[in-house]
Image (cartoon, rainbow, N blue to C red; front, top):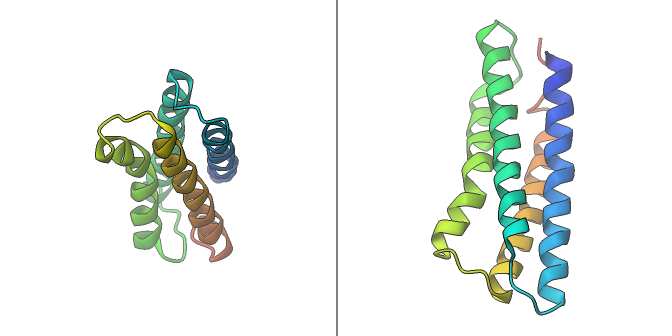
Length: 125
């Protein structure tokens, strides 16, 4: 189960980078955000939620990481931040929204990489 968490977390990092690149390309082409991006954003939030759920299962089964409170706080942030930006922008889909989502996606990737480097995602022991 710990390996599944690692795989999901690595997918989460990669997906964050890809979402940032996708939004950057849309902004560079002077395009707004399409329905494809909204679906990808929802998939991103679901992936972060599933990763968090696996972490909760690992924690409930008695496995621990170094700082579980910080882990759960960061993961909860990563689950809600993209839909939160959507709400904050009130569903705008213009070029400036694409830039905002690109910046946020790259920021989320850097937060996730930071979590990995500081040992917040494993090893579960």
